[in-house]
Length: 422
Image 1 (spheres, rainbow, N blue to C red):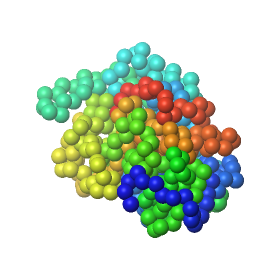
Image 2: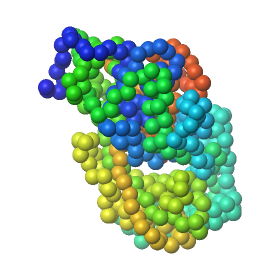
Image 3: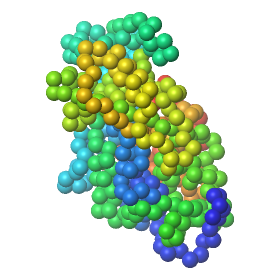
Image 4: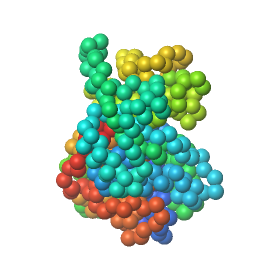
């Protein structure tokens, strides 16, 4: 059946109030947040064989709150509180994920006024943060180079370091387990009556005139539904195209390369480090035996992907070498040793402002949770709450103090510093 065609609305095999397409961290959060505060019948479907097999499984899984827009700070803060109190949030007696607080240091070239503004925006919205001076950083993490001069990767040997004098530090930033958190949310969904179906993708949206009224699954099952929520990650454009929806924002599936290198017990216990010299970031793995390095945010390492089902899952050798060199610039005293591995995932980048599109689309019956630009895991619990409140009118614990139309499809572009570190 051709993309964008309609399926006649007779002969449905099942019905639901809400169908959520995509059971990654966003879709599972949406389904759970709806189910925990309402009696709506929710069906969650995913083409993968289980949770965290798409973008969620390759998430860096950092929780931090430095954003340009105060409402997004509060959204990230509410989500961080959920990750920190994961058993309470999921209402599970035992969970696969927990929260490891590492702290986050922003090594950026900022004036004193810019740093003060960043700090005020965080603390005024409930985030524990402080300014660390160069001497403080040297005392806590003597291995870290405090250079803030951007590196020209075309001429790296010409680089001359310029040390920053003060830096923003988020005290409670940390990491969760992305696969474990996704699995926990699926368990919570099922405990609250959500029907979860893996291994069946959506082959078409069912149209009733100009309205979306359900989905046709690849196995032939049809589900009639009053609301269909597209949380399909890098497959979101394909779903939206069925209904001719979401023409305003440019949402681009983009291959992101992550490098893992061995880290011994004698290596330093570093904070999460956001590196303005290279537009990359680094964080220890939960085991402490590896460190994860996000490749520099330059075009040659961020490949646009036309087909999310077909992309290379391992990093390019040039990217590995450049990322390791950038990391050695930040931590020059640590000798490279041991085995280096890596993986690749897909971010769906909103080219206009790096913020997602969340809420009803311009096509009746179709709602969106798309274009998270690498911030999906950080914001997932709060995004689920936004959609659930819009849909049910009900509030619940851990809800963010933000307007539900913050990321509406018809909004003006929001302020951003740009890129994955926005």
